[in-house]
Image (tube, rainbow, N blue to C red; front, side):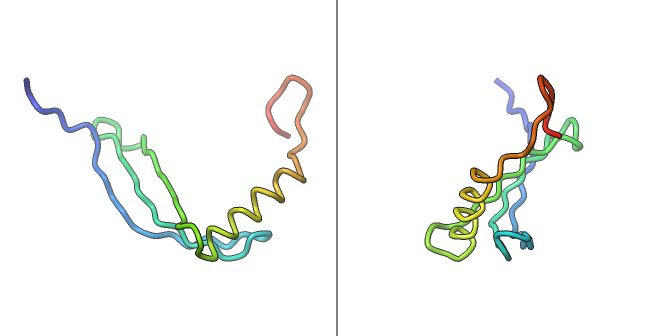
Length: 77
């Protein structure tokens, strides 16, 4: 059976500045489809115990308390 190369992988880090959670630093992994480079899966993670992980927990708690308004039978406003 032939080998098929379906994606390329890249790694890096990303710093985001969030108005609620503050500065968040992530490890990033991206898989890009070789037949359609516009399609990409990006995974950002923060190791437990570092400030960015704590910031994500704070953000998750804040988001649970401040749900985004939704239109009746429709997408988020």
